[in-house]
Length: 313
Ligand code: SF4
Image 1 (tube, protein in one colour):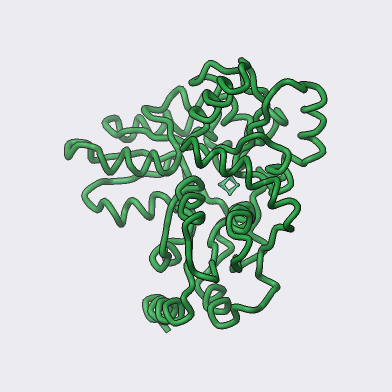
Image 2 (cartoon, helix red, strand yellow):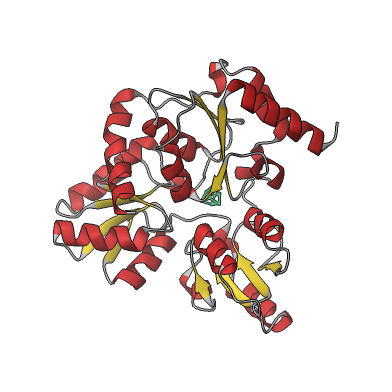
């Protein structure tokens, strides 16, 4: 069976069983092609809060499926491969958040959505890489403070502090995304030499030294719309984020050229899903092995910082 035939079979099954499929921009392109919604963490969180179908298949990492479960306690959220986890989220535990809160009792806790449900339950507000600056500015005003606790990504904390002027104390200071933190200034300089007229876009999860060499710093959705709204003279783009976004933009904007800032910029955790696994789920919707269900008492606490973020967005 070809990929196309398998995709058609899945689309038929999805329609018949009234299932919604959500996919992150970093998913394999053949999954993005059959999804009802494709987006970054913020876009998907916003979609998830408005979905009517009883079953949701979330092609993303575990924290994304957990967020969907928190926002849809009455629905079944399924993940095609339950080994798809985010190593960055593992940098921050609820115990560590409580330690920081004890040390800084007056400061609000901002957590990146790339965190576990139990960590979200300890926070005052969530953020994504699309809205971190806005969230921190708003929470700074609300709590009348010039510093916040921010985790788990120390690079996003640094970026948010740079732009907002509000001190973002990282929880912990070693939290990072292994995909973005492997990009080094040398990679950017090499690509600049090769493509001197190209626009260079990087993600805020990159280090400050990398961000300072880029033309534009933004989330995956911001990068996507930066390209979409670019003039017809802007043809070449060097992209400093996971390869899945490049695949998506190559499809959506065939008139532009995209170059990854370095080879093998792949989130292997995101790539653990495939069409066969989705087919199994569509044929076995009641297999609890693949259901992500955040316990009600955690969900009740974790929903508040997520909804507060969505209100600000
Ligand atoms: S790209 Fe980085 S932050 Fe995103 S899921 Fe992969 S490891 Fe986690």
